[in-house]
View 1 (cartoon, one colour):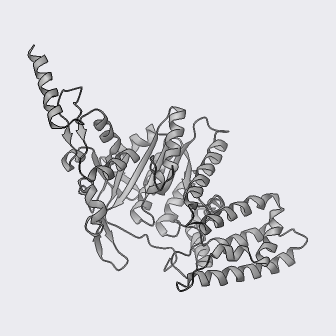
View 2 (spheres, rainbow, N blue to C red; view 1 turned 180 degrees about the vertical axis):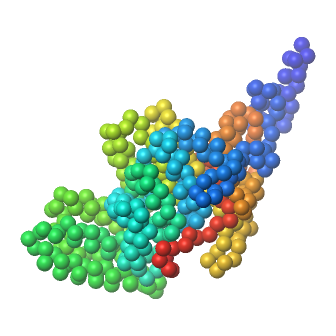
View 3 (cartoon, rainbow, N blue to C red; view 1 turned 180 degrees about the horizontal axis):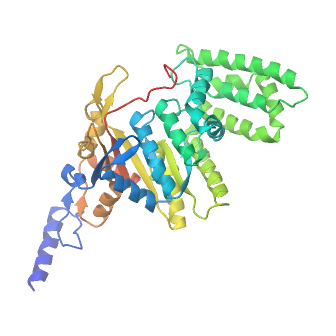
Length: 428
């Protein structure tokens, strides 16, 4: 009788305090509020020394990698710490059967990266020469993004040494047109009109440079790719390669990329995400010809690795989550933040202060950051505790951002003191 009265009393108290509060069915205890103290119980710290992860976080990485078919790492772009982390987890991925590495570059740029990292020991030299040859007037004007730094070359070498297949899923980059014109010319070496094509090629490169320089001028606004494509000399050059079987696909993907950039104000983001999803499935289907359960690491900006709607799109995080559900396997999605960062002028910044309007809503997580260690927080475990009535989210405006984080990702990674990775070429 006493136990019945006890249970009824708890139910009465809950109904009086808040109708949405859910009792913990296992312990009959009232749920606790989500707090920094609670979140700290779900966190593990680690360091990286000479490419090796050390600390409690190592077991977290081993477990999530071993249990997953897909690991989607949502990165901080151009981050020195992120590149170090990727370099450290690639050997662990290899020992657990991961043979595929999906990256935020175009399909043909991924093939170029494979070429530039062959032989492996020449990767840094080849990348340096490639960037120096095609870099434009602005610091972002590089031929292939996210492989511009010394630390990027290092993890690319590690990926290749562990026999990772590179999957390029994204559009070809904004500044890639010149290098693609050179790539196409290689396929015309045996063409009966090679000398004519070669002369046109030089004119096309001059046209691209002219419009690119105008595009860099902030006082003028043009549609760069519309201007390039409507030029009759450019179309004459491309027409030779539309007829060749081994270059037709390059032209098609390049024009898809140009179209996405041209329509950025007209919801082309949705087309970009669909293009990435399609490219992933094409690569995955091909991998199924040799493997019953291909395992894939995805390295993309954090927006792309969320498993819920972001930017009005269901991105790659959603795709691998749904695919894992279908396969009876697991997809793990990871979000990344910086808290402490050294700016380009050498000033140390605290993002919790600089971007307080955003991070104050997430302060209970961000407060766990340390300058000398990575921290990885198990959001999946927090999500389970919420479902089971052990913990409740805040009822104020913090609720929305915290819920989106917990629903969108399985782990939250907070980097140590970080900075922009040092470029292979100065000023890039």
